[in-house]
Length: 48
Image (tube, rainbow, N blue to C red):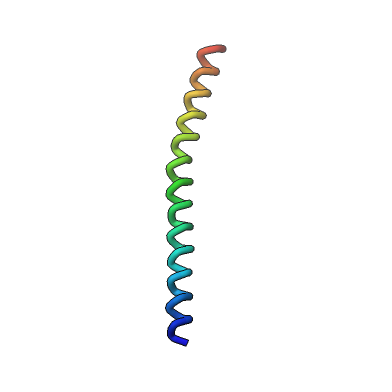
């Protein structure tokens, strides 16, 4: 029983780390996309 519990905790930790990394990647990508959108808006204003 104890061995199974330890394995279960390890697998949960692995999934938690994977999810945490995904959130980091999303957080990094969000400011980049917003910056690109801001640049595109500025270019559209210049073209008009």
